[in-house]
Image (tube, rainbow, N blue to C red; front, side, top):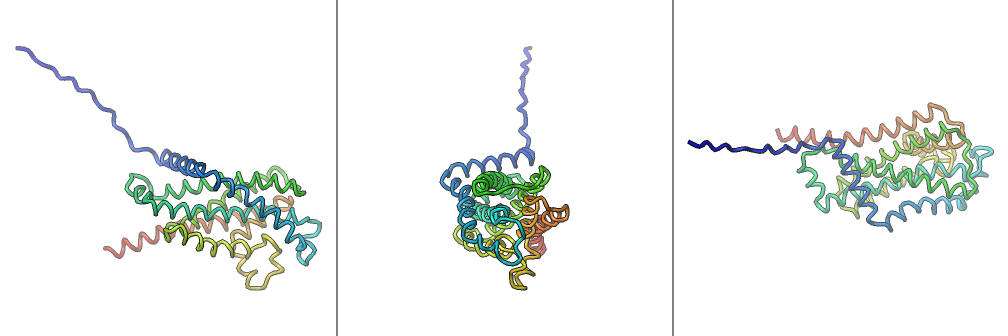
Amino acid sequence: MTTIRTTTTATPSVGRPSALDQLAALTVRNLRTSARVPQLLMFSLTMPMAMLVLFSQVFRSVAAGPGFPAGVSYIVFLTPAMLAVSTVMAGTNAGVSAAIDHTNGLHDRFAALPMRAALPGMARTINEAVFTLARAALLGIAAVALGFEFHGTAGDATAAVLVLVVLAGAMSALFGLIGDRLRRPDVVQFAGMMVMMPLMFVSSAFAPIETMPGWMQAMATVNPVAHATDALRGHVLGTATAGDTLTALVAAIGLWAVVTAVPVVTRMIRSARTR
């Protein structure tokens, strides 16, 4: 009697990618998507430089007004502000990107995948942080050509980068939430402008807060962009304290936390209503 033996080969199981691998894949996808539109990439990187040149000429008379720091040129006063302002303006890209993902159905495909819901937003934040640093480098080159001088130390430079990156994360989360809620790129652009304008101008970016009406001064005290601008300016001048940096970080992280909590609370409320 002949016995036939059957040999089976085990197929190795494919495990679920880790959250870190998924985040890396989404980040690379976002960076590649940005690189596929070189015109948009070029304008988003160079527009802050053009604004720096224009604003440094149009508003330079502010340096002769009351409340302006003594012995500080307007280009030194303006450059840290433009770093913060360009970060806010670029944050609207995260909102438009989120809306486009909804329009194209990509958000629904992400929702169907075994992946944490927060990862697409985190990938957008990393993408914005990368471009924030690139814009800062180009803006610094333009500022030096206009007479800018950095008076801080290496520690000041490091702290300024930290403030800028955290602010970029907060702005990406804020405008990303707007994009997730409105879901139409054209509407998101207009809504983003309405949010962006007070963040930019109700701050110390272009003029000292002391020169503003009382109600605007009150708004500026809770504006993360105002605190970031003050900290960046202090690090540029070499006069910033640890408290300035901490205040800027807490303000940005606080906004980031509130914005991140909104969809979580919304899901909890919907879940409670369906029970």
